[in-house]
Image (tube, rainbow, N blue to C red):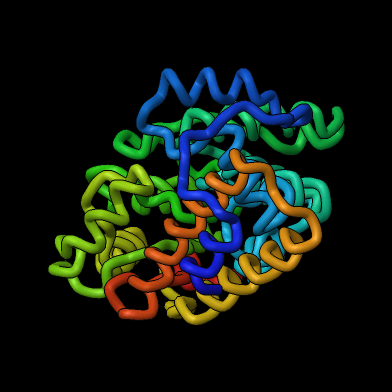
Length: 299
């Protein structure tokens, strides 16, 4: 995907979002929350764009399939309880609870996404609503019930002034012998977090410094008696899935040209992703996956 070609084809520069049909997602309510929460990076329109790239309820390359891939080692079943940080727009929560029957307690820090995800879970039916909940939370003050969950999973959730405290809180929330998995964008070296290119990307994503380093994850895991079984660099996979999603969307756009308003939103989103991909390919950012077991047991 080449941004100049996409911009030329769409024939528009980025412009401010305008109202458009979003009947199933409570557009007015979500946008009202976004207006009152400037720290949010999301509006109803941007959520729609992201889901056209990654799938219903998903804001991340690979969609719910990637979340299941990360969670498979847990051995999840209808008897399992899961702490999920990073509910997004409810896709992972609904699939884990609906397909595997897991009891999911999901948390979302973004105020717009938290409302959207909670409403979608409630509308999914009584059976699912019993097994899944979505609540807002504050990364600066991570508090979860101690030893309340069989497993814990965080998807791009280590944000705020002390990412290591989030990992510690997750560790304390997992029962003995439980699994904990984290997927996170990190700075490979501490100095990289201060690079101008990373600072600009962080501002676009409404991501307050500091960007976590690998030690911010591994140190609290070890301190809480977790044995790290997997520490995998999934950067190349992440980039491949992102590019695949954009190529698929561009093919669809050739069949049905977007309105000028949506074209502007698409270009703005493409610029964000190309900035991210450039940093990942250049080594300034890295996407990592960790899998750890409490006490080194078999779960």
